[in-house]
Image 1 (cartoon, rainbow, N blue to C red):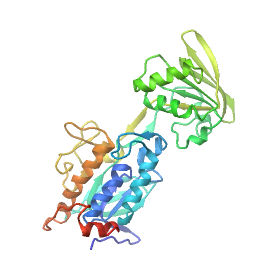
Image 2 (image 1 turned 135 degrees about the vertical axis):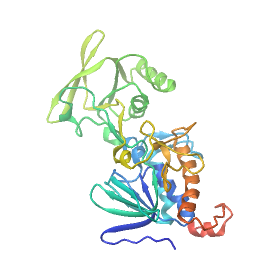
Image 3 (image 1 turned 180 degrees about the vertical axis):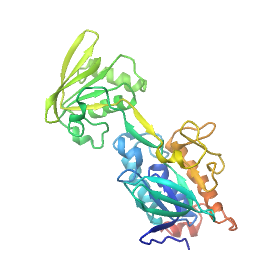
Image 4 (image 1 turned 30 degrees about the horizontal axis):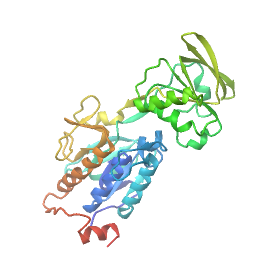
Length: 347
């Protein structure tokens, strides 16, 4: 039986998964089918990774079998799917140190001093730790968390508000369209009339602008007005001078800054802050340490959740062989294998 024991000093598990986003969660499923128990560590306070943290209510259209599913909905389904394998989670922690032991296993330490011992390690940390870029608006810090937000976690939080969205990428356009029916008013500000977003989204936005259902303003936000962190208006400098736009909420989408963090110190070969892997095992330069999802790189890599799911399936087979090299692994289908169905609780 897999060894998952906990002492006051050390948590032992078969596989330590760094990152609890969708790809890390699905890895639990694939590893569980092979009788490997998992413990996931994530810097966030809940499962779902950046997907659930930055856009939980944003629709996703390219998950097989789901013409449309929200990011949080996907995370919920994944949590339901891996429930039979009883994974363990440690949140609000970062793996600050990782070392390989003489027997080929690994010892990991968090930034709070917790120690994990695992037979294999899977890095599913997305692109590392992402932080939203703060726009260069004087005094914006006083409004953050009260009137200025860098992510939409609940659309209902913006119901009935006068919303000002700033940016020209997909996030800015998507939330302009999704929040327009919810907010009392929506204004979108971008420094030019050209966007880096989906043409369909851009066309829909301009259509709503022509129907006077939202406002599009060319320019840049240069100042905020309000008291005690509560916004009243924003000053926008455009090609024809300055204009004040009334708003009670500001959503700036200026992109994200990626910080690889301690992973850079783990002795792995890196390429432009990503972990090169092979496409058979998705193993890093260090045997026993695997990388799946957006954190890895290889020829033809596509940064899609779908790709990460595929990588997790192949990685699990390789991890099983690394942990139990003498054990013969018989590939089975969940649709026809009674033993697998028993593990899933459906037999």
